[in-house]
Image 1 (cartoon, rainbow, N blue to C red):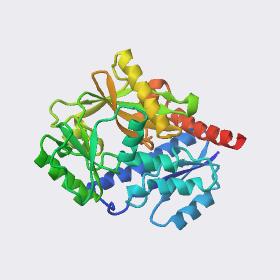
Image 2 (cartoon, rainbow, N blue to C red; image 1 turned 60 degrees about the horizontal axis):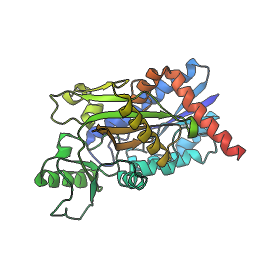
Image 3 (cartoon, helix red, strand yellow; image 1 turned 180 degrees about the vertical axis):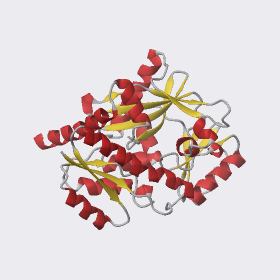
Image 4 (cartoon, rainbow, N blue to C red; image 1 turned 120 degrees about the vertical axis):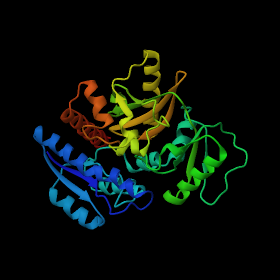
Amino acid sequence: MKIAICHNLAAPLPLRGEACDRIAEQGAAAEAAAVAAALTTVGHQPAIVPFGADPAVFLEQLNAVGAELIINLCEGLWGDSHLELHAAALLELTGLPVTGSDPLCLGLTQDKLRTKELLLANRLPSPRYLVARCGEPLPAELELRYPLIVKPRSEDASHGITDASVVDDFPALHAQVNYIHRIYRQDALVEEFISGREINAAILGNDLEAVVLPLSEIRFDPALLRPIVSYAGKWLEDSPAYQGTMPVCPADLAETDAAAVRAVALAAFRVMGCRDYARVDIRLHDGIPWILEVNANPDISPEAGLARSAAAFGLDYPALIGRIIDAALRRMETLHAA
């Protein structure tokens, strides 16, 4: 099968945020190369089609491939992560099977406020929160309990998350909210910080075939100032945060806790309308699996968390990519049959 692997090129500078945020965007090219290598080993004909600054050039290159299926690895467009859903929409308009979640899902899950509203409306556990909107003062009296964590409302890949994101008092909260407003130019989401074990639940498939892969735990070195997956902990390999953030898969959990995590993760996957694969990040505290994030477009490179969970499930890397392709093809078959 001729398969186009589409990923976003890294712009010279991100549209918002810190200059180092570009490192996360650069990883898309290596992810695409790994997927292409896996497809080649099982007899497919992959072609990598990078999406740069000009959509017309991208579409011309994509059409020249003659693809029968598209693997969508785009996490934004030319330095603007908010255009992730637009890239997916453009690919959907080709009429070809496209792997991964649809534009609506990608837009909703990137907006942390909308995600929380949907989760809470469906009675799924998510930390108490407030939204600190740009240009508006923080309320003098908070109904939330410290410590709190401050995040950009509409970013992923841990952009804007540092040790300073966890705050213990109002002056620190005020400073971090101002940082998000000034550097990331968007609202800040302020949540009660949940202590406990951090669990990643990777999900593969659709509808009744969707399965939660073996759970993975992020273990934090006690020497770290804050037990969080910061931007440095995820992307800056020479940093103490990266060295002190260690994944363990499968996680050593009591079956009652594991079952609760799986049930909540699968429910979040379905509520948000995820397709083919996704990852739900959870903090387990006193038996309650609190949902931190729903990542509808997680990294699927060989060293990433989803591939790690798939390996624990018995799927090597080419088999994982094959399962994702099969899920997308079955979706299209069901749609056409209807």
